[in-house]
Image (cartoon, rainbow, N blue to C red; front, side, top):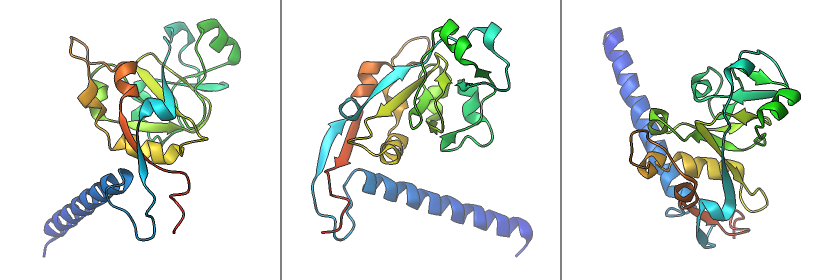
Length: 197
């Protein structure tokens, strides 16, 4: 077998394993498939029942370009930045607290799940978790799960498996709105259902 054939075989095997993993996650994260010993029922909720969504703020060009500061100010393009997979860690722009006050932007908390809410980037379905308190621009939104009733990682994986592009409002510019986002269905384990019976 030549090298190209071997690489092609490995690529097909990797794609197959990724498809199996994705299918299994969809089954486990909806409660349709249960592991032995976990029998408690799940609750059918909506995203708005376990947290809230908040849009980002305008980011004036005059405040852009700083390589350091108190808060990273993420733009949609930062979602492609090396090192920003699962957690948003690296930004091209940072601002100080005084700049934040001047701009009037709010700080999204660590653990917020961010994604594109306007433009073609919505269809890329990228969703990442903020690794630190951060600001986001007005082409992005964040979901802040109520950590007293929902695990951030669990909600992240559920949202990752939900096609947000299916909620896009029709018009010249694709966009998501709060009402649609709050209605995203979530099946959540009841308290204690993570404990083997």
